Length: 104
Image 1: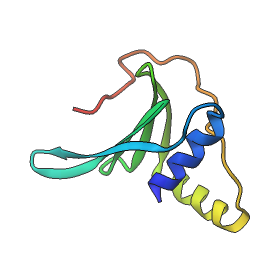
Image 2 (image 1 turned 180 degrees about the vertical axis):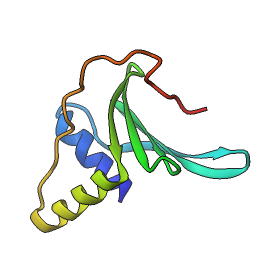
Image 3 (image 1 turned 135 degrees about the horizontal axis):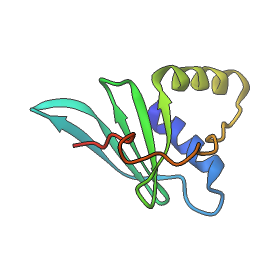
Image 4 (image 1 turned 120 degrees about the vertical axis):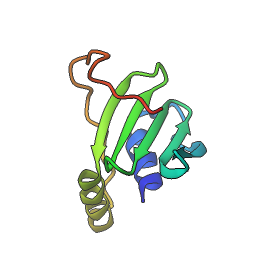
């Protein structure tokens, strides 16, 4: 569900570039599975299991949007019911590097 939602969200924003996931990696911390990293032509997204969120980064490495698990579930339900494609919200004011938590 996360893969298809990510392709739809990024695809709605980037009309010129491909919204196809080019590679996917499992994130392992201390020997335990903790999430996945998705690489696309214009974005990178990391799904953190413990935090139940997906963080979407631009090609420049800046955080563009954070999707909670609840937001993804609601969007998936709406997409199944209506067939709608959701656009990624416009980024808020630039965040300081102190506000951004990066994957280890």
